[in-house]
Amino acid sequence: MSTPDTAPRDGGTAYLMRRLVTPANREAAAALVQDRALQLAERGINLPAEHAAVFRDPQAEALGLYDQYAGEDILVGCLVLRRKASTLTLPLAYTAPKPDSHVGLLMTLWAADYAARLDLQGVTAEAPVHHSTPGDTSNRLLSHLETRGWRHIGSRRDAAGTLTAVLWLPAQASPAVGLLVTCHVPITAPGATAERDVR
Image (cartoon, rainbow, N blue to C red; front, side, top):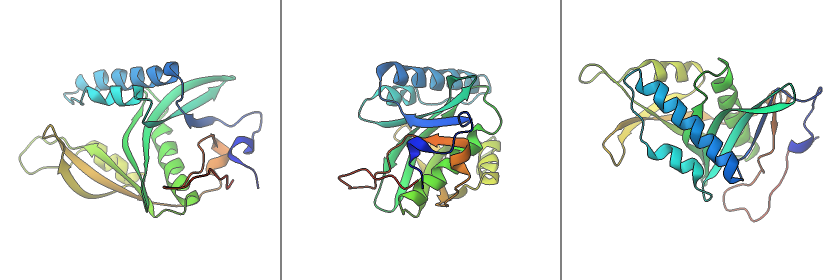
């Protein structure tokens, strides 16, 4: 059984998931979020400006998904991870403005597998809800996420009054994820004092 740092690499896996620990890493993630926000704003979807700032916060457990194309790590997605007693929470998750179509799916598969490796029940996340008529809370983003395995389990309003959908993803071990994504994120359960590797 290999550890995250020695997952099978046929000349290198396609992707790498790791913590954003340097100011430069965090600034790159913040820039990705800002670029994505600008793209969404063109479609009339406005995201809170403070989302980018969260990725600059050294206290946040921010992760980056890198495409290891031609030996160069290219940031294609980022997320913030919070560990709770029975679940993981992804309060923020972004893909690059023009990612490969499967980047979001890879992030979903990784999150479900990572939760399983921590012996947790699953993953919660939130997504903005945009609607064109009163009472209509359906949108393309939620429909897309549901095809990826996320379940819409409720809604809430944030401090600014923005309606967000609460999503649930069951934990699911998937050894195949390690063939696609090399994981350099420590396997640390909520409240644990030591890190452990399980793959």
